[in-house]
Length: 316
Image 1 (cartoon, rainbow, N blue to C red):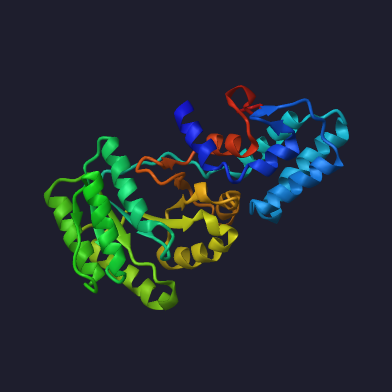
Image 2: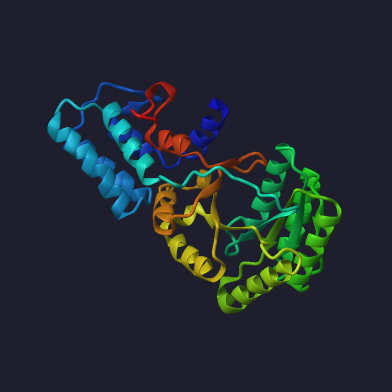
């Protein structure tokens, strides 16, 4: 578990420096700094800068300010613990155990706009499931973007994952059908489908996704069993509108937030969950094949507020 927390802490390192300054954390250690009006102002600025949004920011500040009014001797570590506990409460329901059902194969469709990291995530997800002992097959259904096919082929070869793909411009639903047939015949546990994401032709994209779903349902009426939206964490709260569009069209069942390691706006994750009330199954914390990790509320809030194992919020 310590290794996983380290990944979260390192992955969110661009989000946290201003928080640490407000709380008086220097060199990875909380000092004896008392909170004052200036540090509360720094904290407010840090929360907005990290794209936590108005509601989340106000909820955290209200609790810390109330504690400060009650105790003017409040220290930075105390405030960090309070902030972490509030954020933990706001993220209730975000961390849900991933349960793969009795379907064989279990079909996961990854959805999202170009640039969100879908293709890379598909491969990393395949790697994750294989490491968990599940046989996995990838389906390259993003046939619109030529580079997508090349990218997933490269990743599949690098990670030694079986792949069903076709040529640029092929019918995506036909690829999904072939991938399902291959996964079924090989008795695979999991089939992961990478889909197109050209938002500039949104209507056509949604129709393509619906067609993929119809084709799969001829094989298994419940497929795809999981419909996960892949969101680029670096674009912050702007991704919420994307999520609404896809959710309305495709009835999403979960989220994957990528590129948290490359942004100072890691707080958007809280706003996205607050808006959609969907579980966050995985987060991208780096470039490596094992840097796609199951989402942990505990690891996330402790990493954001700079808390270590011996500084866990009360009640956790």
